Length: 454
Image (cartoon, rainbow, N blue to C red; front, top):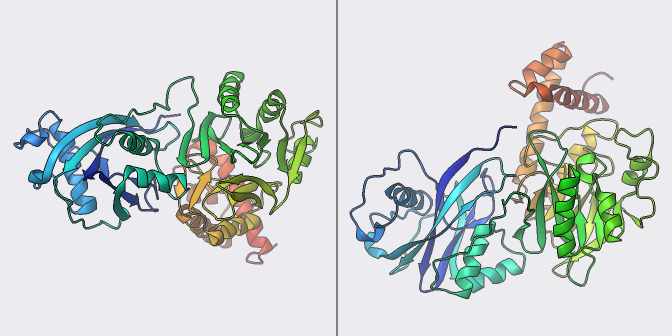
């Protein structure tokens, strides 16, 4: 698969009297939606490399300084170059690279910008929802209470400035080292591992999560390595962190491969829905793992509403979200701070609704259920955490639009091949068999709804 493109980007850590400015990115953005971040963005080809006259920019690439100034003006209405007299000093704190799991990647330069006085900002709402000033300790307190969604470099900057307010070294963690699975903890207490899995393109990884307070069961969710080499990696990092149970959101191979072996090695229970267990052991099931699956393990089955673990003192419950898979369970704390939704949506690629375990009517209902619950952060099984339920709403709207398109084509007497060519224009030919399955699932739903003849 073609790797995601990498672009240069810049970020401004605006500091005045030991307070830092963080902005909440709009929940409809493609990159890091709903995250709290320092303002900045992609370096543009129009950002000139011509030398800047003001001495405060000396020692830094002019194209990066121009990009920084342009982004600050676009997002906050603050022209850094025109207001160079307000700047005490500019220092580069480090460079961070977006994880491989992201559909678009950024090589981001982080600049500390110390200001003589606090500017008045005018927020650009298409990109920024809100923002405020606070000390690094105050920002970290909000994060530790589960209120902020932070990318790892942002958190690294805040921790560095909390420890040493005058520092210009963020000590970034390189979580993209080959051969090592570094956890990402965008939301406090929800550790995310990007595990190479036998999943469907364009995704190459399945998210594995480690959740649970110290006084609750620590749950390892969906470990699904694609090889014994990857198995050793995830087993090593998960064992070092410690876990008390392996939990499966559903029975598809890219969510449970080697999960039973990981549980057996650790001597811990294996949790899932009763439907998932039945189908893993059923000879007739499409993705059967065999009648002996989980033999010798303590198997725990969960139903809708059951408490699985705890997070920051909140019970974390299983939520039934059938549609993509009949036995799929989501996980969400009672305060709805976040929800691990499995394959209800895809951060990378699209969801396939394949019978007999898939049901388009139930899939619509599951989307509607989680949208109504409105968790503040969504964790899909593939890709990064997403702030808010916008992408669930977008997925539902897109499915409704596609269903109307399919209904119209069917009513016009189009064949399956004609519908496939019309509905999925430009799709990778390798994915067309899966696209046809989705069309058939929409037609089944339309018949069940009485919209087209049975």
